[in-house]
Length: 160
Image 1 (spheres, rainbow, N blue to C red):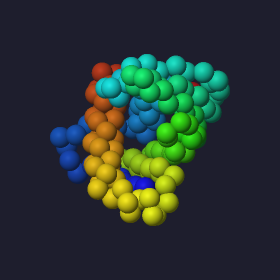
Image 2 (cartoon, rainbow, N blue to C red):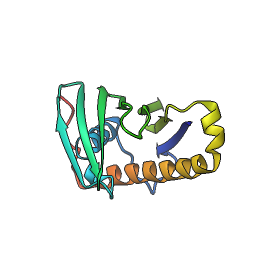
Image 3 (cartoon, one colour):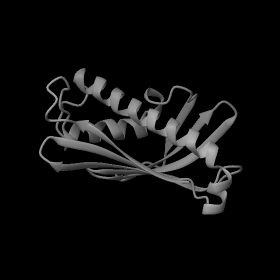
Image 4 (cartoon, rainbow, N blue to C red):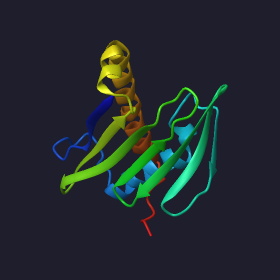
């Protein structure tokens, strides 16, 4: 299943929503990669290892299931999650890209690829509809949490 959607973060015409800066969204996305338990309610444990300035390897434990992935940071606009094939899990990816087509108009694009071919996608159509819906809800929650943390002043320091 290949799935892509866009979430509007800033609507300059809506005075009821505080505008977030690109730096605040970037810091929130990095925090989501490095401290995912703040964003993923059913995650039991996250271990980070092999960290560099541009990527980090992680082991995520959900009960008895452990998923190993690698997160690549393309500062300051893109974060890529890469999951290698492991046990019953196919190779897959998630790319989050910050887009600012004009000043103060800020969007976050999510691109999912579960590595399956079209025939497998067709066979799993109903399940994939559910997954797409769950992904969108999770991504909306990510923005909500980033917005809450920004309002608390968590991302006020400028990027180095």
